[in-house]
Image (tube, rainbow, N blue to C red; front, side):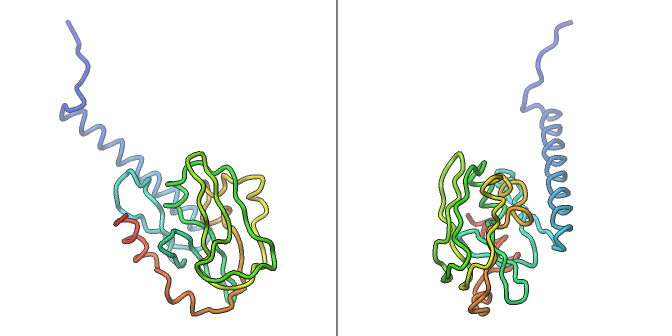
Length: 181
């Protein structure tokens, strides 16, 4: 008997590919939910193309169109880049952050993230004084990829204008934003 390789357009092969994609997608969503659960956040997948690597959008954060997020904690905002941003950048190899005590204006560049694919400026979603930076990122910049909402945060800012948060997107609006781009 002669055997031939199954064509990738064969219905059974197509069903198997879809099962694999579905399983991978479910595993990624489950892992993202567990990670966000440790932060006390609800997670929403953007539901878009697999190409977007199932970018996780965490509820409870505010986002700006340039893909930075801020988590309000009283009069302090914890800032980082979104899961979508890190997935688009690829493996992060270097993170440059401002000095503690620096004053930031909303929309101002405060740092740079370099990856194997690109270097990207990082913009502040809020105005305020930098009260802490994530110094671990100097030795472990890949935390931006592996844990963008937890261990990969970049800085904490004492908010000088809490109303800055009002102009940022919630998770639903940000999910729509990344769907469109």
